[in-house]
Amino acid sequence: MFVGKQTSKVINANQIMADLKTTQLEISLSTSYLYEPSAGSKKGLLVLHGFSDHARSVKKRLLGRDPLNGCHIFVPNGLFPSPTKSENEFREGYAWYFRDPVSGKQMISPEFAAKSLVKLIQQVGFGHLEWTILGFSQGGFFAPFVVKAGLSCQRIIGVGSAYRLEAYEGLSHVNVFGVHGEKDTVVSFEQAKASFQSLEKKGLGKTFYAIPELGHTMNDSGRKIIRDLLNSN
View 1 (cartoon, one colour):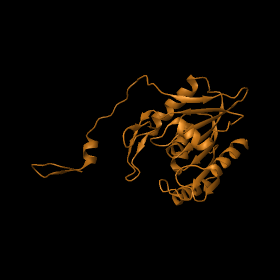
View 2 (cartoon, one colour):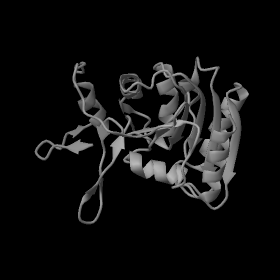
View 3 (cartoon, one colour):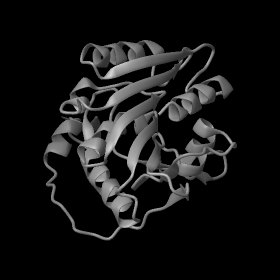
């Protein structure tokens, strides 16, 4: 809320936002990604980072340092810069969209980034692959929008994420798995489990893995589950 100094008139921030006009720009946007090839494979693993996160960090967090065989690995950075302030500097970070977790107000929708990401995958020559999406936190929320944008994908693995049932409408062909720390305080374990159960009732949610004593990150036990899932098909 903003308070005028002379009139003491209170102006609601939502009223200010309502006065803004929106339009679309056709622009060329520079982006970056990690890529590890797998000779002869027709499978791809798309790894999506969380809010104010980046490609190198999420790849190490979810997959560790050991090589993963049998699929191409593609780890893009989000389209929108979202650095975090440390004591003496800003740390690299990106976002896929912006949604206020308190009010639920969406300021940057995920559809634009989803369409752009699918275009990027096609542009670099990977559009023919059959993909699994491994999404951490915001990346897990974002995953179904990428499938809706046209990515050939039949499996989503959400890590440290919750699941919005409306985002999965029309995705009956997708199998969803969840991996979540019981001590997560960013996306609560209870929220994640309850939302996953909603997917189960629709036939989309397959298995939800609870990791004891784990917060909003990943450990060796969780990485083993992820690798077992990736190697199961």
